[in-house]
Image 1 (spheres, rainbow, N blue to C red):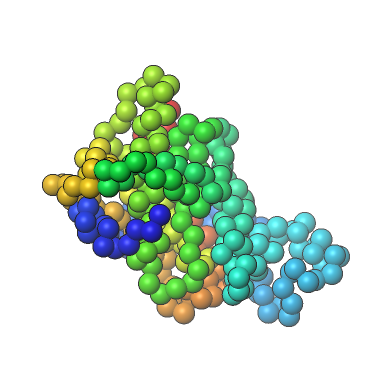
Image 2 (cartoon, helix red, strand yellow):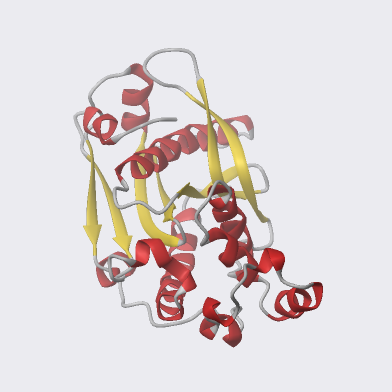
Length: 267
């Protein structure tokens, strides 16, 4: 799935940035209750080596108190393993923040079929998603290495929301429910460990336009919210404690917001 900003323009899709107050309806000010206080203040300068090469006793102490820290450490280190490490961190984080409620599971690399350009269905992989017992995709996460330009991962997560719309309606019909005319997907693009939050509305008109490679008459307006951090934080991300706290406040606001949206289309 290699969508770019050109594909968004081809299907009359625009992305508009909002402040946190506009996006969430208030300024995020609450930390998740499931996060240990020690995780909030830990600085990675406290050790000179990555967790992967610490002694077993040191790792056991860290794992038992702050299980997210080793995942955050690996996801923050540049190298060939950084991108899969970001996925591991996001999986652990979403479980820790209790996105995975009873009846919902977090999946990685979930395959979906995608009707595209009037051709046979293509196959796409969602990096990470929250799914309702294999019936309804609720949240979509697209992972990316720390970069300044987020246009391509942004376009990809929107394309995958369209694929999720097709998937959800197909499941609804298979289970005897009427397909829905629209769904708004909560979504996240992670730039390293820094999240960008999205509300992606998908309609049947947009789905049909993509499937048949036509230009829809109605514009699709996607809303996004970027955590207000200094620009260099895209490289540092959550390994900086002050950024970590602010990002976690936004995650908590997003978790609450997401549930309001997916309850509109969950089976």
